[in-house]
Length: 411
Image 1 (cartoon, rainbow, N blue to C red):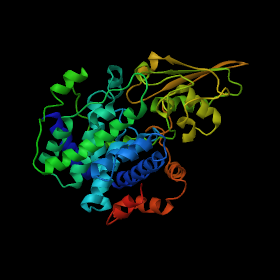
Image 2: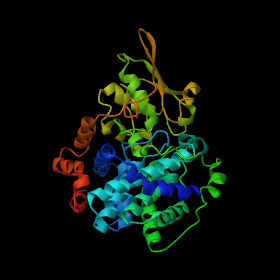
Image 3: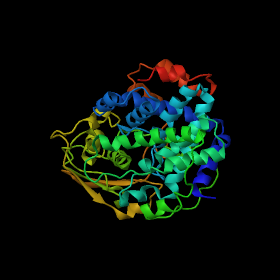
Image 4: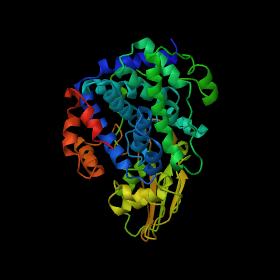
């Protein structure tokens, strides 16, 4: 069996393996993702997307997926180093609206989409791909969207494998070494749109090579696919909600700062695993919000503000003089904790001396999950409290006869 065939089987099987608690968790993931989509519509980078992409299904999926990730606030699977929410949830909701499918079918689709994109990321080393210039979400996001769409279209295992093969034919996604700009955020959008398109083409009878992840992909990525993950539960259960709107490697650093005495800080050093330094910067002035969201200095400023969950800190391009100097360092002892634990060590210099704090499991990781009430509060903040009825209906997603009204209320 090829890797793509195995991924298809996992995607088809996953909804049946999910219990009531996992299905309830899906509704929270949909809620959290759509909060990010709504907030993302006000992001400075959203304007070019809205101007160019129209009302066609592909355009809407692309725009929602990009908006979901613009503030780096969407759910993540640390081990696979993918953000499955941004690619699976918009695809699931918009295809369900088009096909007239109920909320329970959306739940199934999101489970299937998460299962496939996370498993693909795990098979190829997750965050280890960063070092060779690849972004796992951009590489495998189309597979998640294809699996979610295939579930909604009622494709069997064979046709689902064809959908994944079609989606795999365009795999790509280089991780920028300098500025991200809008290009970085177009990648999950394009991946999600390609995945939806692949599922519809597979329903129409189109096929593709099912050995793409076994032969060409290892040559391009410099590594073969690893063994399958154990078939226990579903991968969605290990995806964490983000408490802070910034690149995930910086979350442990924020947690460390919040646990320390930072009054009158003169200098802050943020040490990360060497494998996670490829897209993080320490600049105080950056080209735009994309780089600020990956900025250690901006993360320090967010922690010092006392409101690290505030998106405004990361939507600016320059810090004021109140933020102390920040430097980045690599800590190779933290590399041993990857891929499951994205740790950080922070050293703060104050007039009274230097203190260090190491955080292994950041808030929002499987070991320290964000409580449901915090996820709901995050949604209300991101939507300015304007979607309280929407929130109630979304939490009952498994019982909804239609998602048309839910989708119609999101811009």
